[in-house]
Length: 240
Image (cartoon, rainbow, N blue to C red; front, side, top):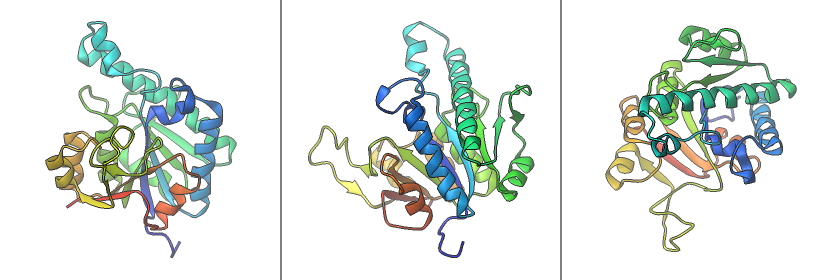
């Protein structure tokens, strides 16, 4: 493990990342590829925790359009993250990667409740831990969950895997040909520049706990391994 920059990580996957080109639901070839990439870095001895979003199944905007109460819509989103987590667990274990799902909302028949010390012990024993159900509270995103869990388990970095975007830009590179890519930023830069990377709560929490964030393109094979080995890809966001 001497050539590894990060020994314990939180990998943040959006729900849309599991949907692939379909744009919704779970695309079997896509989740299989993601699982294989995780398997490859697991073999290196990396301690891996994962937070998965639920946007491939449910988004808060849908609840707003229905006139649904925000808290109720957020709870549905939490359940969507749990479904994604269980699917990812199954495909990882079919690739011989021992995996545990811990949920912030108790549902003992299908997953463990989130217990910080138990999560750390799983990581130390070489098991991948998937944190599902967000923080367990409405009004908080899975970005905030990623930072919170990273702080709790003392992770070296958060790896934010993006769909088809190779870092942080000054504007949307798909619509603005003059968009400038940043190689390095601070969380305060993100807040001050209004960059759409994480919500403000997540950025502030990351800054307060000095947790590095690496934003990179998930769709390019081998990128997760390149990040943990310290190769200069994507955008690195320093906590302070």
